[in-house]
Image 1 (cartoon, rainbow, N blue to C red):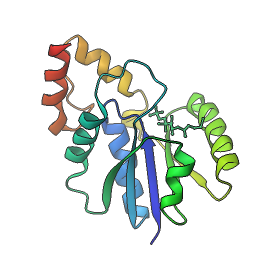
Image 2: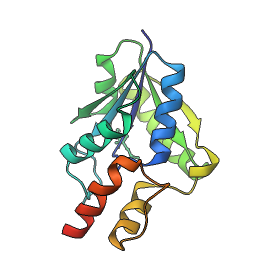
Image 3: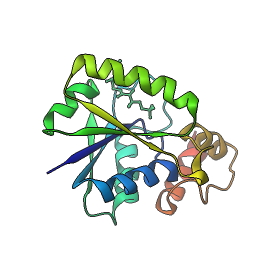
Image 4: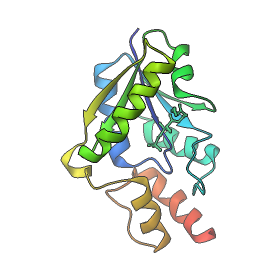
Amino acid sequence: MKTAICPGSFDPITLGHLNIIERAAQIFDHVVVCVAANATKTHPMFTVEEKVEMVKLAIASIPNVSVEVNTGLLAEFARRYEGAVLIKGLRAASDFDYEFQMDSINKRLNPELETMFLTADQRYTFLSSSIVRELAHYGSDLHGLVPEEIIGPIEEKAKRR
Ligand code: PNS
């Protein structure tokens, strides 16, 4: 069975992430959405549990996708799935610079680990979790940016902050 791992902070998951996950699920037997628990990004909006809950809501209708939490290095996490490849989405050339560096360090840590890149759908090239967090902070409409099912939870969280 060929497994793809879609890693990220998912703070929160966006429709751009979901589009990459759905496309990976068409190509691979199984997709593992890997939520990073110890990402170096300081001040996340959501707890890991909340991120996982939102990912679960977003992927509920895709049978070959599951979600896991990773507390360590991604290159080590990937060893759990024999022959797995990492899938990363690229929105622009600027994403590539960072991802090229990540691929190099991941290969150094786990030489068998390949990373494959899917270019972002045109609808989502501008979209990021940080944009969603900022819009949520200002109470702006999130339709078309994040899965419908998680708009309520994001709005609730933004109100409480
Ligand atoms: O959504 P993001 O923030 O771009 O995702 C980055 C992520 C979580 C994929 C990356 O930071 C990660 O894999 N972190 C786990 C620790 C790790 O393996 N770092 C790479 C070696 S320095």
